[in-house]
Image (cartoon, rainbow, N blue to C red; front, side):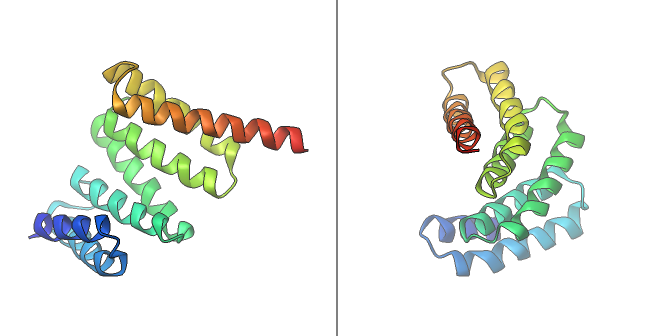
Amino acid sequence: MSVSLNNLAQLLKATNRLAEAEPLMRRSLDIDEASLGPAHPRVAVRLNNLARLLHDTKRLAEAEPLMRRSLEIDEASFGPDHPDVAIDLNNLARLLQETNRLAEAEPLIRRALETFRDSFGAEHPHTRTVAGNYLRLREEMEGAEGAS
């Protein structure tokens, strides 16, 4: 049931029906936590999905602890150099960047980029996306340094 709820929530999110998607995501997360335990990798996926929805609705303070918990679960489950961990790192870094915590975001996104390069190569779509995110972050950091 949690997979069906999650899939419907993702469809609603993709069609910009975020208010309808959120309770389904929360229910899917609750079901997976109860049935699989709070540290299962599928729980990390559900946390990340909900956090991204909260991020999209500018509820960054609510999204951040969910992203950090997802990262913690994935690192414990897969190790620090797994592509799922890199996804979590990129998402958290983007949130930190949006909250103007650039110095905190930089090592996370750099680590995500290194993981994707090592896992998939420089031309993989994930690597290229994170490379673009890293470049924008560095440009923002340089602009902030020049403004001070």
